[in-house]
Each structure stands twice: as structure tokens, then as C-alpha cells.
Image (cartoon, rainbow, N blue to C red; front, side):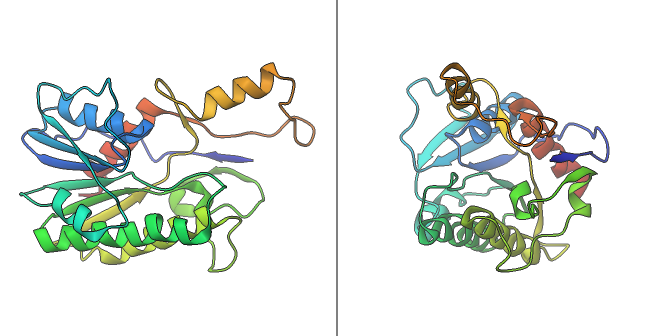
Length: 243
């Protein structure tokens, strides 16, 4: 069981006139985040992703530029973060339970190091990382707690390699913050769903319709999900609170 509480509603981030980069720009959260930044007045938004540009991708009158690249390749990340970027929203990650540890390591940890290095090289002052509640989850109940009240699991005590490599990336982002020239933070939305979702709700509905949806325990478990609009607002509002 995982339920959390937020510190407060927060305020919308003022991104008017900013140059922004969103990694994972073709994904559910990253794509909507890029759109929200454009809608709120960003001057330029780079949507960076390894996937081909979606056929229905909206550039918002040219404000959003789609850049295809690989997080695990330092040169790709370096180019995306050049040109006077004000803030990087690092959303991109390798997700799911089906990959080898090496693949998770290269994208979720090495890729995050590439983002941090590129930010420092090009004088990007702010970086917001999307982490995961799985970096804290130990298999037991977490009821009514805040993100900052749950420590990252000790090395070697993670339930899957995705969580371990996301934790490594989060620690790297946290440690890179110097409180002045480079400001960083991490947030951890859980199980995001919404329009353009091709993972959570489709799979849930498919399992339910096929009669294969399993109930664990007595059916009294709680879970935390995040509508993707809320997740995007959480990520942008964190910029205001932290920076």
C-alpha cells in the first residue's frame, strides 16, 4: 500500500521567455510537460527523446523543437542542452521490468550523469528530475507520508533494477546541486495515466476484460496514481518551490 500527501498546492511556475529542455519528450509526461511549458510562455522547448517524432506531435507554432537522441550518448545530450538553456526537466528513463540491468544502468544512471554534465558545461542553472516512488519502496505499507519522509533504499536492497538505477540517478542529481550556480531537485509521481497513455490503463482494461485481473490480499489495498496533468503541474511547481 502506498499513499502520500503533498506539502501544499504550490504556485504555477513562471517560464515566460525561458529556453527549456524536456528529456523523454515523446513520453506521456514529457510530451504534455513540453506542451504546458509552451502554453505558459516558454520561448523555446526542446523535446528530447530516442523515439521517432510522433506523427501528431504539436510544435505549438514552432516553440517546441523535437530532437531525437539517446540519453546514454553524451554527445546527443550535450547538443540538446546547448544554446542558452535555462532549465532541464529530466523525465526520460528506461521503464518496465523486462530489461537487463546494463540497459537500465546506461539510461537511468549514465544518462542522468550525461544530463548533469551537459548542464554544468553549458551553464544551465536548473535541473528537475522525475524520479520514482520505487526508489523508496521496501514491500511494506507506506500510508500518508511525504516524499521527503521516505529515504532512498540502501544499496543492494531494491526490489528491481529499475528502482536501483533511478535511485542512483536521483542521488547524482541531488549531489550535483551546489546551492548557487547549479540548482537541482527530484520529484516522484507515481503510476501516471491520462490521454495518450499506452501503458497503464490499456493494460489494466485488457486484463479486466479478459478475466485475468488479479486481486492481491483481501482487496483492501490502496494505491496511488497520478493523472498526468497533476504530475506535470507537480514537476513545474517544484521549480518554484525549490528555485
